[in-house]
Length: 220
View 1 (cartoon, rainbow, N blue to C red):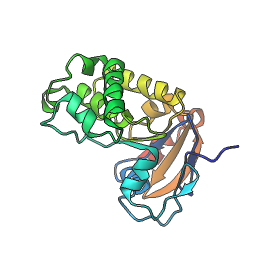
View 2 (cartoon, helix red, strand yellow; view 1 turned 90 degrees about the horizontal axis):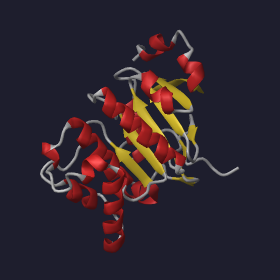
View 3 (cartoon, rainbow, N blue to C red; view 1 turned 45 degrees about the horizontal axis):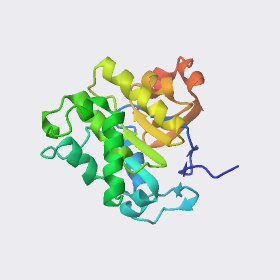
């Protein structure tokens, strides 16, 4: 069996798998994702694609094939849709332009407004731009932090469907989400955090059927 795409000591994420990272506000979800990216030092051993990256800086980890959708998007507000996508890519120019066209085709709401400034987009359009930006270089691992925050239900449904399609193409996905039922709807497993510690790992169905999940989520 091949090595997991991501292994942070407490849990692993396999190729083509979606894992939900759950917990209340302050449970440590964002900190864990930022630690995987390399923004914080880690007491755990972190392996990406079979390689120990615990001591590697952020840019080296990203270059290995990590995509990131941060909470509240953090787009380049003054740049256009197309410029945001191009600015995020490390691909050679010709490949980058081809990939840009692919992303605009894959995300019709962006393809209709490639020259619109990011700050003029709706919240849903901005979130789709953040996702498309993270997918520009075809990451092997995609990390998302609270991607459904503040979005309308129809946009949430579209976003979740796109994550499922991305996983079906072989990308490993770790998605941090406070609304457990949303993430567990598309994930195979859930990892529950409380006060910075993993307190439970179980299948999505097991967690959805667990009457104590609300208490775990409220544990902080």
